[in-house]
Length: 287
Image (cartoon, rainbow, N blue to C red):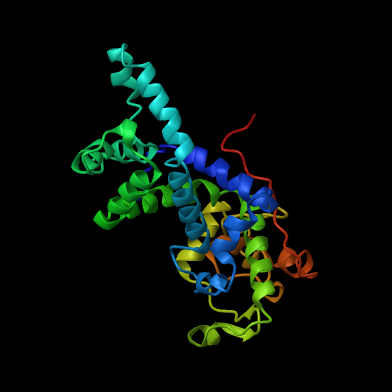
């Protein structure tokens, strides 16, 4: 059971959507996620903490560091000075707090405040700089509270994004392209057993927990033709668990790359081997 608090969850969903839909605007950052051989360490088959979880975590961390940069600090210092004669607003706005502190407070996680951190350094907020902010985040990481927060946010964001098959198709196409790009280089020795041939992963059995998650997300129906696969209407309809981006096209053995199809759609619609899914969803109620 995931206790979702949805603090900035949809904000991060939108950030990730924009990155996936407009990757050319974020090539440098994405290269740090999958480039220079890093893709190989995102390929373990069907981990519960999937490749999509890892991308979410990577982006959320990057956002929190961006929210502690020099330009953000300058705006906060300016606000602090403007509110000095308005103590009620100052107490409400709390400009000396970093965005990550608000997230930690919202999630009831104990931590040392940035002001207390600065006080130990015999500094105040007006005198601090970006190095102080990054050192503060580094200290949160050493205490473990930063990673705890990021992991929880990643799970919440995944909970939302996993339901959007079109978006996860785009994610998996991006990962497949990264794997294809690296195919001309040898995989690390410890990962060679994952591959059928360079850039092509071996087919492995899809775990029961993955099939269960996908079955309930897709509500027991073929995502392409809407055929009922629950066995309650027709016992002859067979459920097929399909890689959205086929393994032959450098697809991943990842939870985010699986969808529910009927036997016929799996054999006919996916015959060309292209990435195919549907953006049609059964409504919770009739309009």
